[in-house]
Image 1 (cartoon, rainbow, N blue to C red):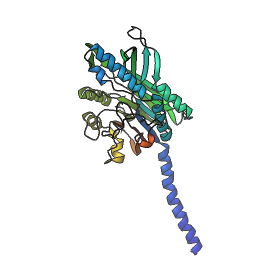
Image 2 (tube, one colour; image 1 turned 30 degrees about the vertical axis):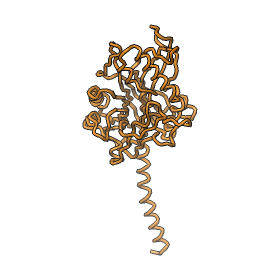
Image 3 (tube, rainbow, N blue to C red; image 1 turned 45 degrees about the horizontal axis):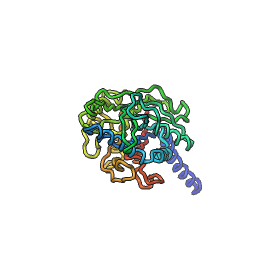
Image 4 (tube, one colour; image 1 turned 180 degrees about the vertical axis):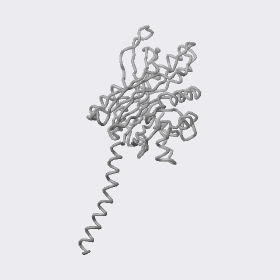
Length: 355
């Protein structure tokens, strides 16, 4: 064989060897689904309202919660969350604390209806302004409570807070690539009850789910937000997830704010992973703590070093993982006014749906 022919044979063998992995990689990428979870942060803490002992204390605490939310520049924070979605380009997003704040005349029996901030509407407008095509495919309303709040010695309002969990999905993909089959949304059966001036208030939590086909591969996407104040309630809700929406013959991707620290052996986290759900972060970046909370204090300009991993992407069935990252936690992610996008970091992962 001539030197020239031998050289050609060697180059052809090298080319063929390189083509096969590239073709295999291309096929794998065709089934690689990018998903995200993000707690948007309602903008204030409600715990002190639940522990207020007198009507005056309630008025003061409700007013403080509302003014703290206003001080955190909600539109700017949500614009920063939209930036993270733009950068990550997830196909499906699970959102928690998708707040709706409304106000009305104080001490009136009619529900407050004047919208101060609708977090979902603001986010959709921000995404559309970036030429990103997303729509909510499942919404569950959780706590919906209204109380009078004192904003100053001479000013009061009825303040209504509504909590939601939402699944967003891209709408610009052809049906052959992304097809929504059905959705579900429910509150947990077990929820925390707290007394406010002797009257019981149920702090509803819930989940949303979607049956989806991605390039013909069926899977279930579930988004949840578990109780944060009482561990036994949280554990019961986690059990509802593991025995309900997170249990399927199809592949399951479960995302959310679970309020159970994965790095310190949270009991609810252990129960979920013990039920067969795999932790994407642990499999891809085991050894790196990946803390997601708390990035800030009550007002999101009071920065903190996160110490817990509460925001998770879990999966079961025929899936593997190629990438996972925490987003929105860096100083570079802060808004022009210096706010963190949320008190939680988001998490984004590439999940490979196997044949």
